[in-house]
Image (spheres, rainbow, N blue to C red):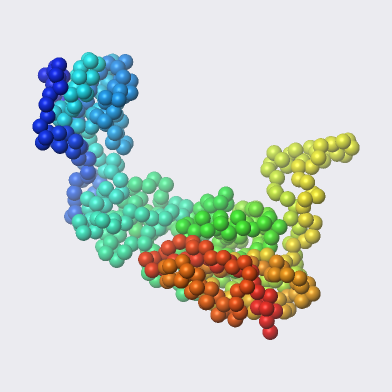
Length: 483
């Protein structure tokens, strides 16, 4: 919508006008107020129609051919409209041959002498354009700041984690009276999200998944989440999943060799196990939660790693004691090299056909001389991603090799002992004190000092006085054969 036309000739002169000190300050600080209208009376339901604002702004009407000159001019750079989601050039509703170049000011007095002179040279005419903003224009943060009490605006909870189509929040108690309107705003401002939930303080004591409540959207909690080139399906309300651990999942998997055998003690739905199998590792994946084990089995099939991952549902301590024997008694086949792509599979079939008819056929895509031919029957790594209590399970390693293997089978050096990667929490925030705390607790449970290849990795801060770590160490031989 256009307002009155302003004549540039009355705004320019041959000499640059002198500005008072006050005028200079005003010219530098005067900006468009595009903040949403304040509606602090809303608390449970969002009324989108209440968020409307009309802002008069100046626009330079120029022939369409002159538009580029204005947009590229260094003189005009600081005066052009630069608001997000607002087009800076519009078609003149009264003349198809002219365009409106929006400026970031409402009053002509705030334009510099250089800008006015340049516009006159370009045969521009200043007009007033009404910029209409609605609910869709403002961000979730901006809407929340206009609704919440002023005392709650500083830490407004617009942040959330995304798992599939679901956004999950951790609202502090002071925001709970506004939880449903917060959820609706998050839903409105993120088109890919269909469900918004809030994690409650209570946690299932047996299977360690969080209880939660629906804030907005569909009550559909079965998600499909993509991570590390893998697809995971699970019921977010019945299993444990933390999207913020993506980097930690990748970090550990990068430590594994394709020939390794991994024992994942608290596997969940497979965030370590399945990417490791995609790499070529053989994996024993276990979880006590029947729902986690069910979705783990589904994800194994969906990601086409059924030949490399064996799922189980049992107590972690029992799993630790039995898995080495399982690997010995029913070993995985030897690693046969990286999986071929569909194109490579076609080429390999063609090569085999040619090999039957020609002794000089092309070589195989995988050099079998570099591939181990022995079956995999020794666990290389234990992953223990249950930070709240994983350290308490370390005593299960005492004597774990007494019945699973003979001294002769594992004689030699510590390289034959598996690596253990144990996640845990600590309230010691200084790195050296955190290291001492974690090592002391680990050694206490093992009943033995850690000897070689000990490393601590700080995963993330989970609370103001609580950090998550992963301690990796070579299992001491005296622990494995303890009586």
